[in-house]
Image 1 (cartoon, rainbow, N blue to C red):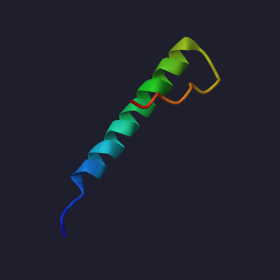
Image 2 (cartoon, rainbow, N blue to C red):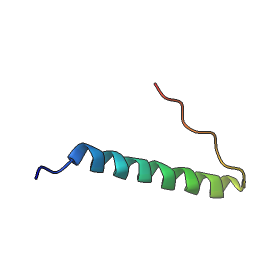
Image 3 (cartoon, rainbow, N blue to C red):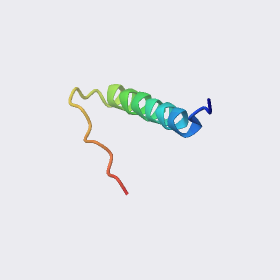
Length: 40
């Protein structure tokens, strides 16, 4: 069975973005959740 690499890659990228946003939020000292990123 063929692996779905695109799906895995997308999952990893989303996880990275989530962690990065979490880090930035902690650094800023805010507690509210940031707005969802705009889709192009």
